[in-house]
Image 1 (tube, helix red, strand yellow):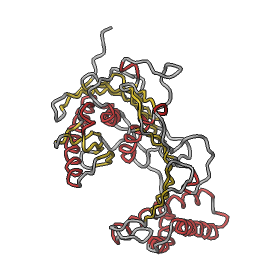
Image 2: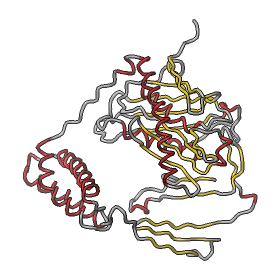
Image 3: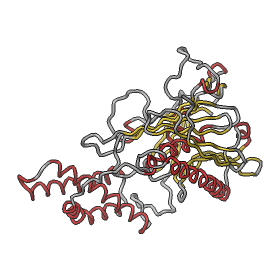
Image 4: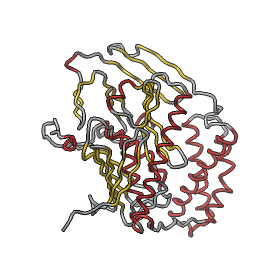
Length: 415
């Protein structure tokens, strides 16, 4: 039996390099898969989605994992077990960049468990693979039967020696004044993430425009690939719309709208505002229970709660956009009150409190010796880092109760 010939499309980057997207050769048991190739860099993206949602599930369980395989760069992992372990902080951050861009584009009624895995299976020293991860994920969705309102893609735009460069070489990045990753559909920018050295607003706008134009080329290539794949990609799964009790929806609107508007315009703090919103919902469910008597079912209260949350979101959005009033009373051009204090911790090498509105950060600084440097061992890089940043997001910081099981939303970054 001969080799499988994949279905593929090509397009060029602004710098003239050719990017190839192919499907049908690897990971054939996945619901869909693609390989994105740029020179010697190759990313494999796979998508698997459950055939139906779990009973009673009302959220979308999407997971996105990006991992750089050491073997793809001809390296053996430097840990004790000499094999890949959990995702590194860098890989988690790239996973989140992809997640943020694609999550809003799934149908609201599609709640089937879905997993997207993106693996760097071959890497070189020229091309940064992170800016192709979203392209790979979106392309895999484009050639699947999963309902997805894409395609999307991401590109890195850097300002180097006064010029804006799309997906620059790795060796060029250290001299960049601006380094951002942009995610977008054909029509809309979805996400911008990055850093700069005192970036001017005009430069940021120019970078976003240049990045979006490049992304449009990526999206056209994905649509072309889907058309070549044919029915498997163009005929999507039928998503059964969640039935809405229109009578109950109208009751929620009639009973709660005025109260929600009043709270949204009250310029209240977060705690009292949440308490007020919750009371409106509780009072409505209690009134509904009293009205229906023995005909009331607990499922009605659950559905009423969901309808109430949708109504609340719509009204709050209306007050912010059309009346120019934020929930805490600020105008659109006002920032939250800020106060700072330094040297709060007497024994730390340095410390500070930063408070903006209801958000607070307590930061400590520790100075170490050369032996405290952090070894970064990635598939394409190995170096020591002198600056290490850890930040924690414990449950109490948002007024919640959760068991402490190690890092959750906490992140670590080195620079």
